[in-house]
Length: 460
Image (tube, rainbow, N blue to C red; front, top):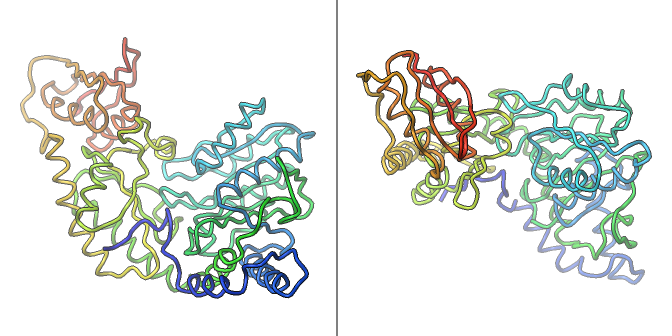
């Protein structure tokens, strides 16, 4: 069964498995002790730190192992903000950061700090000039991911780092998605990553803090990891994480080229095989193994279940599920279609045959979901005399409001309008996206007694 969700967690690399098993026998003792077993454990921990630091591009004494990538982000942000509190309490993040960054930002804001979110373009990338323009004298920290976890777009880290350097603001880079593929551009002050993203074991994160960066650990601290990560180090997992990082970096050039070709095939073929699909993210400046697309008139959760039944494990950047009516913050920031969203992220070793089977399974899966939802197969050709119609889609979640719009757009004359009443947050993205795909005019959003009224004018 092909596993196509490496962006969530990559399968354990063979080198990680070997290193983990070996370290279970040799690295179980307390590395802080001076007896033989402790010294042996300390040697393993130090060697792992040196290997990881080399891959990150920092000194070994600048690198801390944490219990997860999320913990690394939380500790990095809180420590940097506390260390620079005299400068100010202003934090800058991009609108498409990982939730761990945004959660830290929300906590900072609830404690009296201020946060500025830098918008992104339709590909999901920030503009370095726009980022630089929000840096202030009281900016304590800036955060920017190296590449987006949902759409794969690479960010202009080098340019933003230069702008931060000129402003005297440290930059924290979340490199979780990209570190296994290569080093992060120079200029960052803090860096975080997570081992399970590159084929290491879960439960190991990296936090690198450059010498000279003001940093104050928050919460109780002990003598472990320079006081930045309390608790006994999981040496076998750390050793496996460092070993696998070195291994995937050695394979990265060849595997990157191979997977990029497979992703290019998916990007090119999906819009041909499946009608009404929007492929999102930057087509060039992107991670080599990841592609995301959205299918009009399809529910993402149902589509993922259909693909799972067909033998393919994929994920979605959309959060339009039974548990929440809020679309992905990344897709919302980009202003792209959120319904029927599928993220394919290929692990190392994915074959061309696996991709071809996925491309065969996708069209019937999408068609089946659309049929169940009653999606239109074509726009009705004959207009009715009415110059305007109102569609009541209140209480119905995506993609139903768009499906109902598509069913009736042909019932108004060219120049007539359809008003869709919806209280689904995703409609704010999906109705304008439908208009762009169907070459109709999105007039705008108006207030309503419940939800919002979205007005569309028929152009053809």
